[in-house]
Image (cartoon, rainbow, N blue to C red; front, top):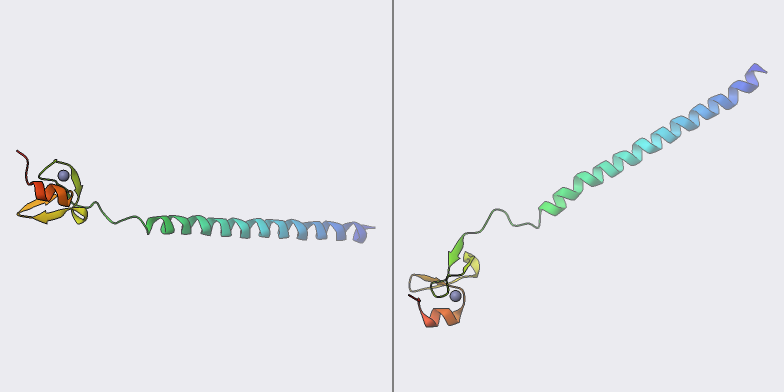
Length: 87
Ligand SMILES: [Zn+2]
């Protein structure tokens, strides 16, 4: 009688351990995914702020890489470069 009642208890204990192990593994996997996400989000964002330059005609500020440069002035567009500085 004692032996018969002990076996299901041992089986139950094994199942409990299996469930805990599965929960632990799934938690580890989801935790790893959460750790990976910020890295993938961080990669496409440009590093640092780009230097802003001012259009000599309209006075708009724009990134240096998008600005046109001629005659010691920066311009937002070719049209404003042709029009020249506005004073
Ligand atoms: Zn302009």
